[in-house]
Image 1 (cartoon, rainbow, N blue to C red):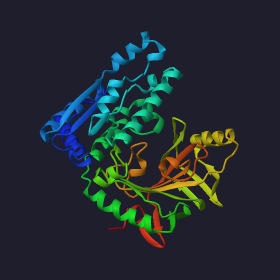
Image 2: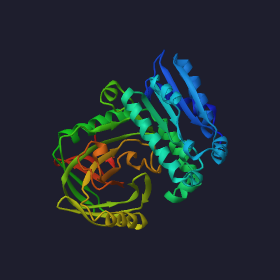
Image 3: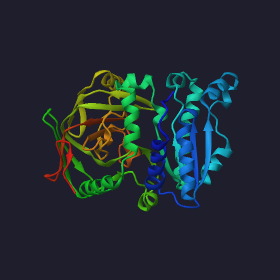
Image 4: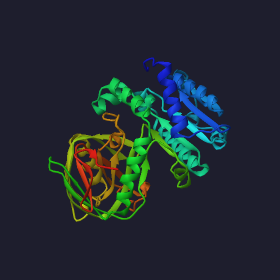
Length: 375
């Protein structure tokens, strides 16, 4: 279970997410979905929504009841979502989801059919959010667990504290820096990432529109379909010219490999690129899994897919959000079509990150030794 957090902290987070992230307005419909572990946070959000004059609807999933219900339910009904839930989402202007359930080990033991249905539900949820333009925030305090803390080798208490502190950051500074970095990524042609640890990787930019997650869902985000925000947030990213990558990237903090629906932690590692493709790497157990998957797929060419610059000054530990630490440089490779790129194969993606690195665009510094140099 989660610790008891002060109501003042819960209300402050609710205000930041509703007023600044979602820009919730008077008269708008807000759907709040929570599991029992994060119910106090959801209740505080309901109160803040009413203060704004919005119309909140709170949906609660009790975790103990959920696990009990699975024992006697027909397999065909496990994880099935009713039309009334989709209807509530469709009728909402904004949606806040508190991640769950917390028992990650038990969730991993779900029957394969139930796990596939859950994945299908998540894909359908994303499709409906995008189709109807529902401004959406997901907060992952309910994702934290001893199991995942051990896997990522991080302190559970620090993980939870950062999730709160980083979600409370005033987005104004991230907006300024995010826009400045995005303009340089959009207009630039050549990118060079360096670090004293041996990193020297040259990439080419393709003039594509960068994505800026700065903690605010503004009208431009809504117009372009960027309506899903996982908080805390703070990153500017862009897909690169896939056929070109030359040099070495030595990651020095945790990353992640996505294989299907699986998330595999990647430790610090060495990644070599020649003639636009990944040629060699060494990254511990996660690297072993990647090598095995590539062998199973027939050794496809793996190309660089995306680079990003982190913007959030309160992130340093959070797994899966490592790319959002202010000044962190992250390289993604593998499939990037889901990020707006052109690589559809292989059907895996890896994200590896660098602290204290430097990024130059067309010879001009954007990040120097982990510090954003403008605006």
